[in-house]
Image (cartoon, rainbow, N blue to C red; front, side, top):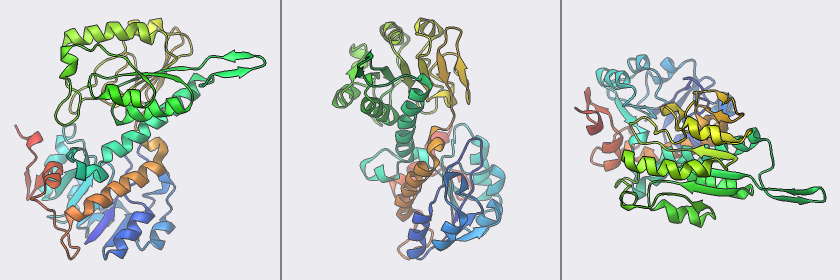
Length: 376
């Protein structure tokens, strides 16, 4: 098949969906590859490296996709671009279908098969294709590193002739992939680390990383996880109890990292203005959910806000792009793992429509919206 790799230029996007290494693998398997000019430049992958791997450089995204059977992207490009694709071709990426219904409609109108990587089922054999996990892992790491830099004090305990420096206290709110990596990173840096989540299974995970678990462990807590491994929406009563417990804890913390997201919904507010007012000057909150409204009151997308009492609220967007080279490498490997489910034995483009991974990810097929999440 002919594979095209887009230059994703939306907002703060610096990642690319294929690296020279994965392109080399595609070419060695008999595929032809076109890469849009400077597609990997922001992630430190030069056009020359793609050419050395066997790709051709296209002058624009439009030129790259015209003859492509499959288009690889990070964000899916624009709805307008879909009209330039061949009817029946496929495009993959983090397409944000619930937030971007016009894009889905445009894909159906163009007769393009749109595959949303965030909809890949969370099953064991799809782990190598799990873009959300690979990118969240890096986001969790980076959040601690940048939070520590803004905090501006030592993270571990230091015993010197001039006296002892107490270790920083780090609190992670939300123990998914990003949260677990944040815990591990904070621990490696020597911080006293605590964490909270509404899912019971995370208690042991937190303990296994050497951190202390903080939560209201009532009956609702014991049933607070979906079959897909996501947190359920908690009742107002539980949220009030949890807020009361965490409020006194947050007041003692130096760095708080919030990661709580529920797919398809606005992020829950976990840190209120009243909690912020209790924190010490110089303390830092890093809000990884700011793109969905934020977990921290007063967080602003793309900005670092400093409150009147000197607390810094970090609202950076697109955390994986802040580590664009590593994020692109992992993203590209996820897509390479998905490719066998999009090709026939002879290498031609042929999605495996009977496979639950493709059924879960596919938004459109043959001019129609087919994903159950988008119907009704």
